[in-house]
Image (cartoon, rainbow, N blue to C red; front, side, top):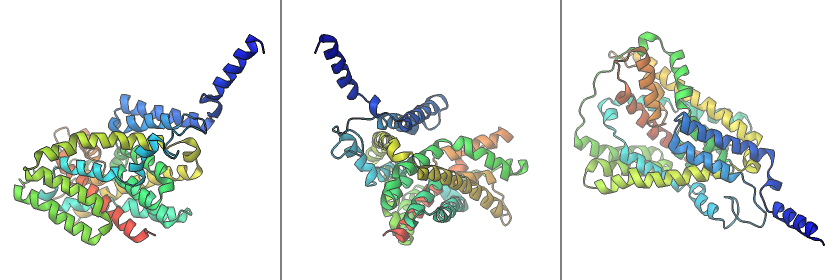
Amino acid sequence: MNALEYIGSKISDWFGTTAFPGLEWGNAIMIVIGIGFIYLAIFKHYEPLLLVPIGFGVIVGNIPTMAEMTLSVYDEGSVLQYLYFGVQKGIYPPLIFLGIGAMTDFSTMLSNPKLVLLGAAAQLGVFLTYLGALTLTFTPQEAGAIGIIGGADGPTAIFLASRLAPDLLGAIAIAAYSYMALVPVIQPPIMRMLTTREERLIRMRPSRIVSRQERIAFPIAAFLICTLFAPGAIVLIGMLFFGNLMKECTVTDRLALTARSAMIDIVTILLGFCVGASTNAQHFLQARSILIFGLGAVSFCIATAGGVLFAKAMNLVLREKINPLLGAAGVSAVPDSARVVQMVGQQEDSTNFLLMHAMAPNVAGVIGSAVAAGMLWSQLAK
C-alpha cells in the first residue's frame, strides 16, 4: 500500500466515525427546528427560558453517533439517559411545581373567588381533546396524556405522559412547551373574535387586601380539597401548595427563595434540555407526532375559547360584570396568559390594567390542570 492509498484509507476510516454517514433527512429537519426554537427565544422573546434549552437539546439529540457509542437519551448507561431519567419517571415536574408555588401569590384569586371558575372552564379543552384523540385510534391512556396539552402546562403534560403514555413523552412535551411559548400568537385572535369592544373595555374593581392568615390557610385547605376529590394530583398539587406555604408563612424565607430561584432554574435547564434531546428523528418524526401537535393546537384553542365564553356566560347573571378577556388566562401558562390579557385589554384602553385580575384565573388554571391530570391518571391508570 503506497502512501496515498494509506492516507485515503485513514480518511475513509475517519469519515466513517463522523456523524455524516448516519445523518438522515429527518435529523436535518429536527436540527432546523431546534435552531428555529432558539431563534424564537432570542429574537422574538417567546419563552426563552424554555425554548433555548429545548432548542439546543433538539440539536444535540439529532447528531448521529456510532452504534457502539452510548450517547443519546435512548442508549442504556449514557450520561444523557441518566439525566433523562428525571423526565421519564416524572421527577422534574413536581420540583418545578414546588418553585412555582414558592413564587405564586394567590391573593388576587382569594380576593375574587368567582374568577377561579374561569380556570376551571379552561380545562374544557383537555376533556374535549381527550374525546377527539379517542376517535383517532389513540388508546384511552394516550388520549388522556394528549388532552392535557390544552392546559398549556408543560410540567403537567410531561408528568401525565410519563405515567400514561411514555412512548409519546417526547412529542407531548414538545407540543406542550411549543404552545406555551406561542401563547402571545395563538390567544389574541381568539380573544378578539369572541368579545366585543365594549366587553374588552370593562374595568375590574380593585382587589381587596387578603390577610396573612388567609394566605397561610389557603394552601393547606386547597390541598385537602383538591386531593380528596382527585388523589392522583397529590404529587403536583402537594408540591405546588407546599412551595406556596413556605412563601406565605414567612418563617422559611430561605427555603422559599431557593425553591423559586436556584432550584427551579436548575430543573428547568435539565428538563428542557433532556426533552429536546429526546426528539431524535427516528423516534420523533412519525405520523402520530403530527397528530399530537394538531390535537394539542385544537386543545389549546378550545381551552382559551372555553374560558372566554364562560366569562361571558357569567356576565349574564352577575350584577358586577367581569372583563371576559380574563377567561383566556384560565390556561395555566403562568404568567404569559395573564400578560396577553393585559396586552389585548390595553390595546382598547391604555389605562385599563387587567394584569393582576388575570393572575387569578391564571393560577387557578395551574391548579385546574393539575387536578385534571390527577383525575385522568386515576381513571386511566392500568
